[in-house]
Length: 115
Length: 114
Image (cartoon, rainbow over all chains, first blue to last red; front, side, top):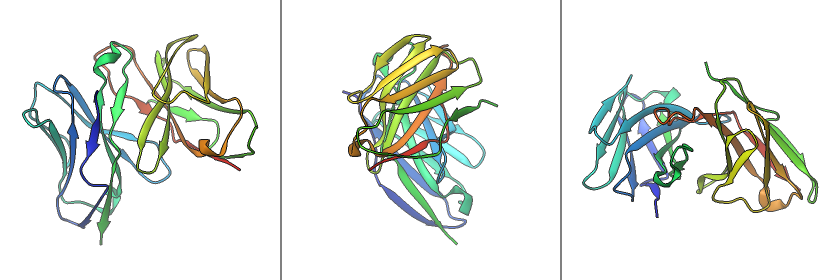
């Protein structure tokens, strides 16, 4: 079955450093992935997405990399700021869901930014 | 901007009570979802709805039911609350169009059952 997982439950980085959050998925047929950010007391918010026909996609200070060979994706945050402190989830479109838009979520990685 | 609102941010109920969690979205989305979020378990899908009066079970539907009488509103019902239903509940919505996979989330309701 499909599963999405993150490698580390917690990541601690120094302010100004780059952060890399990893995620592994199990279904080689998966074709769409999303990263969400959840700040304390709020619902998850969309950060960036990537389709399987791409290896890399960049946003503002964030980059998502997709390695289909090893079924791995990562979220890179450049020059990490205190406001980046949050829980980050990767999510995969559920292939069995046809048009319902179901997503399968990983367990989340807590990013702690040290001043 | 898409707005998904949930009726309560915090809720405390007693074991055995019937609990209603309400979710409203203002973007005319067809699909709506209810998740619960627990430490170490991520987001788990309880139920979803792909149209008015249409619903499907998610991964953990036991102990829950849902209602979708209007397109903008999706309710989660705990028929008889139990302590193991203490959790954060998140509602989400999206367009049915396959080009739009992103789900938009509400702020969550933290439910405590005592």
